[in-house]
Image 1 (spheres, rainbow, N blue to C red):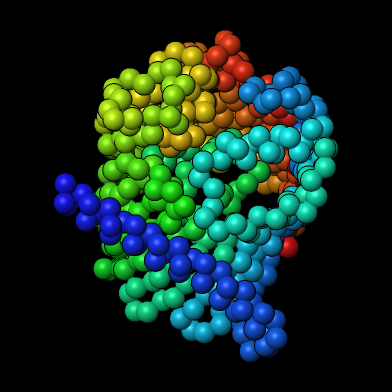
Image 2: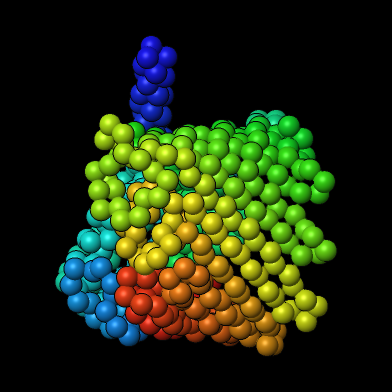
Length: 422
């Protein structure tokens, strides 16, 4: 008992210290940007980004939303990527995206989705400029960090992307920034507010320690990783604390007969809040003890891909979730937002094919299948390069399944996107 109390004291002190560092960092970073603007000629910097417009047609009602939304949505986006090199060992990064969204009842939709967000950033760097019934203007800073390099050590403080996974669709061992393959209009992917320390033991080996502060214990993440190369495979072992639960995992990436092969395995000793999972309809292998949902569970992902000489690309991936539903996985849609599961289902299969029809035109098709409830969602697409800086994308999300299944309640969606990069 004394050991537990001491560990809890250390945890609270460390989290409080990191929170102070984050708040101080935010103020210091603003001063650095102001100083750079005044003395820009004495600093190296780089600015880039893109502007694009996404038009969406939704054929059917969006499941679980509390009100009816319009069929048509238009999203204009401006992204700016700013990099500053104030000294030889320092780099500052500021990246943001500004969104102008028009759709019927868009204000209530965004409010509802914000309520479901369980892993919000620690620092509030989102600004809503316009909040009307059918029009929404938002600016979000998704990268804001300062890095320092000295010899074999690198320290990064602030909002950053911590990508620890090796698979291309599902990343069980990515404790900080799991990837959503259906969020195709956000290639940069969300970041996290963290302190990251990396030490390179050699050209192919490194130790990484990362900590994310939280306003509650459930939102604190801290983890360590050792990565090396073993028989031409990049291999990593990791362990840490996420969602108030102990995690340990292994991942790898390499080749078999010139085909890419990667995998991830994650073990979780769950200690979930029972109130947060009170509507859990399918909690296999978990038990309720002292108001906590406890039990060990596993997530595993395996991925293989191959590119032929004629540019034809094939990619297959499989995800296993030991506490996933074996029927009607759609009933667990909100539960996984809290537990951090990558799918509400026990099994998930991904299959992708793509091919360059011409040097300027690329076709692609992928499908995600739930083999238990037989539901699926697909994504055929065509992308054409109009010029060096302009490209256009056509995409659709057809889906099918019975009511209550993972994808059975998804409406069909159709997308048209025009993008200019600079």
